[in-house]
Length: 190
Image (cartoon, rainbow, N blue to C red; front, side, top):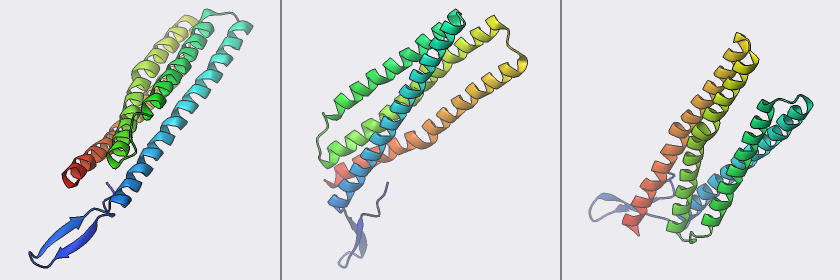
């Protein structure tokens, strides 16, 4: 955590290093981290909804042009992901009003945002990549895709899976641990 806001004071009597917390600086840092996480979540939800909404429209139009149930099923799946994402966005926004604006309230809000990102990345795997991988595998089996297409599609899904897992384990989970460690430290100080 950014503890450079801590001011180091030398205690002459004991000859020990003591630390005093600059509460305003800590509060500003926590608020900034909470706002950054909120903006990331907003951008993520908006992008997922727009991309999947456009894909739902394209697949639906493609299905009307060349009637085949695969396009309609894919369009419906994309539309369901948009609705699912917007439902959780609404639920998250509603929960944001439950946090107070104190240091601990802001910190708990930042931890909640980080938990949401971790949960969302998990849902991207089990609720998005796995169903769409199975869907497109079924479509390619039905339509008789070439080996090159199989390798391309499967490698794209594998890459997406690895990137989502990497981001989750290397960025978001350590950030959550940092925030929880800061919360524990602040509880001792306050």
